[in-house]
Image (tube, rainbow, N blue to C red; front, side):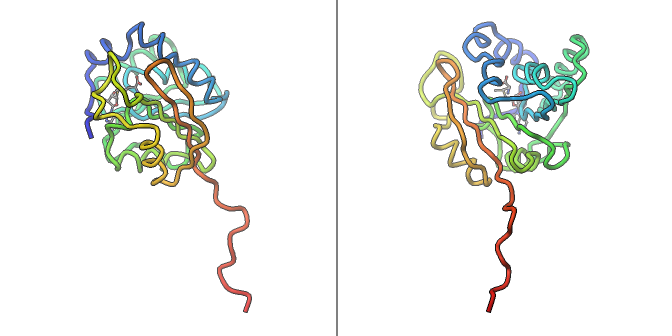
Length: 204
Ligand SMILES: C[S@@+](CC[C@H](N)C(=O)[O-])C[C@H]1O[C@@H](n2cnc3c(N)ncnc32)[C@H](O)[C@@H]1O
């Protein structure tokens, strides 16, 4: 685990840069994932809201976005931005690594953007708890090779490692694509329970 709560200064310098917006276009990412009006999104490790605000625009007034972070400073920054931009369908949420105060199975989509390589298994259990059966978990992460920005290569997860890690939580990978020169996106589904459960007793 290499992640920690980010400060406002980190976020403004790194997460909000114009170069990042060009290489990791958040609108393009949501379009490829097929985010729809009316859906509920939980962005775990939302930072400054780089993906959360475009998601709020796409899901519209009938949808909702929970922008979750362990950093008090960043939750405050997102709240200020939502108020200034009059974004009413985005709720900033302060979490701890072991608990996200959002109810079970409420999300159509859970986003982990540039966080999977750094969060604890407890946070992952929480992220999966929030996902409804049939919902999608989207993992945006750094390719495992040297790039001018981003975490050291040794801290990054390959697509294969990320897939294996998330499979341990019962998630099934359904799509994968590139996002700009340095990132990949993996989409997972939380399987629905079978419609006709297997017989519990034998027919003998
Ligand atoms: C690399 S930044 C990514 C921010 C955002 N997802 C983005 O792509 O712009 C990682 C963020 O995760 C937050 N974070 C770290 N550990 C966390 C955890 N266990 N649960 C929730 N947020 C966490 C940090 O405070 C920081 O804002």
